[in-house]
Image (cartoon, rainbow, N blue to C red; front, side):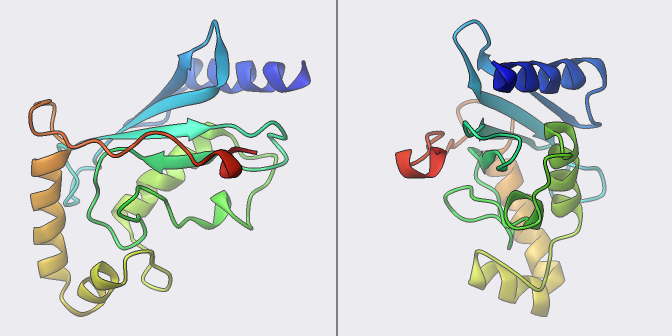
Length: 169
C-alpha cells in the first residue's frame, strides 16, 4: 500500500510540475502503477533537437529503495545509451537515492543527452567517435534523430519496450 502511495505521489508531482521537455505517466493507472511511459523532447542546441524520444519505465516492488528501470524505446545514437535502449547513468545504478524522483531522473537523462559522459559508455564505437571526432558524432546523432525520433510514425523505429523478467524485481 505504501508503494502505491509513493507511485501516486510521483505521478502527482509529474502532473503538477513536469520537467522541461519531459512527461511521464503510467501506461494504465487503473490497472498497473508499476509500468510507465515517458517522452523526452530533444534539447535545443543538441543533435537531438526536434526529436521525440520514448522511454519505458518499470518501478521495482522495493521502490523507492531501488531505482526504477528505464530504457529508451526510441533508437538513440549516444555513447551512454545502448542499442537496446539501456542508459548508463549513475543515479540509475549505484548512486540511486530514495530521495530522487522520476522528475529528477528525467532531468538527468535530458542532461545526459546534452552532455554525454566521455568516461563511461555502453556503445564503444560511438564513444570512440565522440572522443575523437565530435563533429562526426553530432552528424550521426542528428541523422538518427531524423530517422528514428520523428512524429512520422512510418519512420519511427521502436525498440522492444519490455524488460527481462529477472531485472524487474
